[in-house]
Length: 166
Image (cartoon, rainbow, N blue to C red; front, side, top):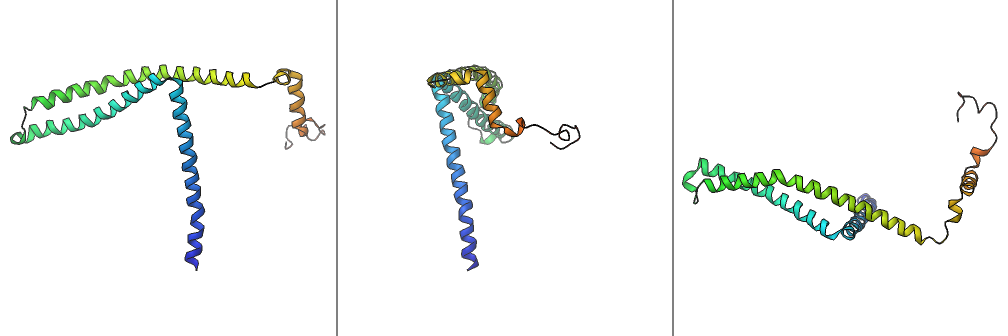
């Protein structure tokens, strides 16, 4: 009987986990969609550059394995040992220079994304039918005063003391 009760208690934990994963997936999808809408070309370029960097990293590891095999086991090498060594140097140079390109593209894309978000915010703000009351500073002050009545009530001399609890 207790086993069933324990099983029933774990169900909410799984449902909470599922809900969190679902919310994360929705938020991720919205973020990707926002990035894609901001600048498709630059987003594609960054995706290609990051993918290339990952592939080159794996390639460098494999080429270093081929170079080590060629040095320690020369009888198993079909090609010249210089081919994997030169390929490793080329891949290493590409891996060293690729972050510079990625960084510049990332900075340009960040500026583009910020401009896109600012533009979207301004468009949404212009869709609000009447902002007149919010542009009047007196109205804003009255709204704040009414929303916090405890701050506007008269204070006793004990409350104005710097050592009294607020």
